[in-house]
Structures are given as C-alpha cells and as structure tokens.
Amino acid sequence: MESLINLDTLTEEERKIILSVLKKDDELKRTQDKKIGHLKLEIQAIRMKSVLRNGDDLSKICARCHAELGFLFNRGDLCPKCHFRVCRACQEQGLAGTWLCTLCNKQRQLKFFMEEWNKKGKTTKKTGTDLVKASMVKQRTCWRGFGC
Ligand SMILES: [Zn+2]
Ligand SMILES: [Zn+2]
Image (cartoon, rainbow, N blue to C red; front, side):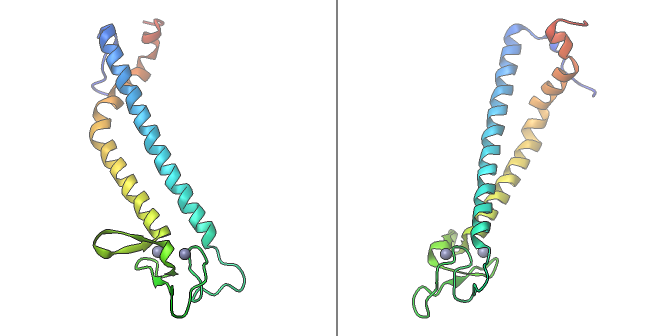
C-alpha cells in the first residue's frame, strides 16, 4: 500500500464528491451484476428446457424447446455452434445472416458482457475508486473520529 489517499486532509466537499462517485460506482456494479445474473438465469432456464426425457429423439424435435420438427416444413437447422437441430423459433438472428440457437446466443452474450465488465474494471475502476476504498478501509477509524 504505497500511495493511499490521506482522507483526513480532504475537505467536506471533497468527501461528498468521493462518496457520490463511490455510490455511483456501486450502483453501476449492481446493475451489471443484475444483468449478468439475469442472463445466467435465462441460460439455466433454456438448459432445463433442453433436458431430454426418455424416448426423446433429437432428430425429430428441437433441441431447445422440444417442438416437433416436420419432414418437409419446419425441419429445423443445425446450430453452427453446438450442432443441435433447433426450430425456427429457437434461432436468434445475428449479423450478416448468421444465427445461433437461443442457448448459444445467450452464452455468447454473457461472455461478451463479462469480458466488457472485466476490461472496464481493469482500467478505470482500479485506479480511482479502489484507491479511495482502500484508503477508507485503512483509515476507517479516522472517519469516525476514533483513534487518531
Ligand atoms: Zn425450438
Ligand atoms: Zn447452439
């Protein structure tokens, strides 16, 4: 811990600003966590739906929603990622005519989201608010007026 901020030297105004930044930071993190949690739940729900029961034949049903696939119409297509056959309703269109099944699509979203979040966390957050937080933890007693 080399360069912690000495919180005692801050003015009331500066403390307020720092606290509001910390609060915003926390709110942002909570929103991100919620989004990630939501995606994880959706992935879990799709997984549950995809579980095969006895007698299910994956060549005749959609791997995701288990809708029956026809011989001529709605035959389903193989997902380019997981290679399961899925019906039209379970195909999420992407860029340039590509698509993924609902499960692969959500997983890709989640991965993208976490990567973005990690990137952000490594650049801005570590330098500013984490330093303040570290300082607060170390000097917590000073903020309360004890022991210093
Ligand atoms: Zn389906
Ligand atoms: Zn897939």
